[in-house]
Length: 145
Image (tube, rainbow, N blue to C red):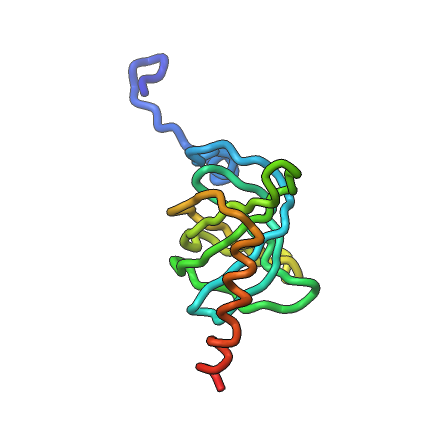
């Protein structure tokens, strides 16, 4: 950039200004919905809640009824099923997402948040999913015995 006298002038961007830049590719909607997180690497299956959601990402409040849960690693693949409000004409549906952990925030130690970059998303019947998981539990338990 050239100054008034034609001399080159450097523009200094303060770090506080950089924090306000929105780098998201899709708008996020602030919404708290119950969600179920599974991950084979953590041997975790727990009900949590969303903080916000978009086409390409999801922010999850990583706590379950006051229980301390192990945090995933950056880059780890997790599956999240977000419960949608029931519609009496269609039954209860969920958003089935698979994503990788992009960021972990422990600014509030009692309320960690995990940001996911969504790789795959579709809509499914929520109750069919529950029945399939319940059918698998005896098999999984026998493997672990």
